Image 1: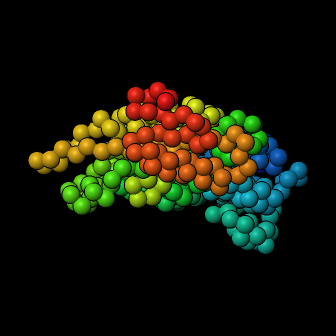
Image 2 (image 1 turned 135 degrees about the horizontal axis):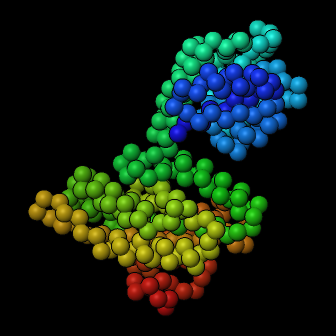
Length: 305
């Protein structure tokens, strides 16, 4: 259900605004004062914030400025509630990123109409953001989304000290599939490979299309030993795929490189280590999992050599 957060220092104004919106199909949350509003916005992640301009502890303008500077809250639409606020303040608020304003005392019909308009815009923006981060062929996260997720997980790893693993995968001899069966068949192989990798991932893992016939998985809170088991499951399942195409049945394999953050100094190094491990898997004969800086190869039977 949609969440609407109302932030005002006046209990009476909160009660009135809430009453005007009770007929809307939304969960209505209230926070009294600017500081409480900031905390509620970060905690509840509302879909829309109705924000009073004039509050004594933290002004609406400052709340808006703070939320727009926070990556997790920056896209949340803000509608200002203006009573004694000046036109200049309203303009400053709109310049800071607010989408609209409503004057007090509230006209219920107008308030509900502006809320619905703001939520429609939010839904469209959400769709655009989602499409901008999804690979259209496979439905996986694209490389842009992958890198943003990796950056967040690297920062979280640095705060909490838990390991982070990165898996890179490459479909073996993919050019031969395109040359033999056509690019339509290649697209089908990419889609089935993506589906297979996703099925082996935990809910906390992120599978992505890295580019071309390459895929990647971000494995949070796990060392390379755990991530290599995931990679091996993926390898086995991909090897067992039988993809029907008219009179032909296509089979394929994939190679995997795994690295974790333990002892590494940067995210770029983590990616480079996984890429190097993938190269070693290819050099070893393909259809294999290679873990960076470990002696053991994971053989096709899943046992270290």
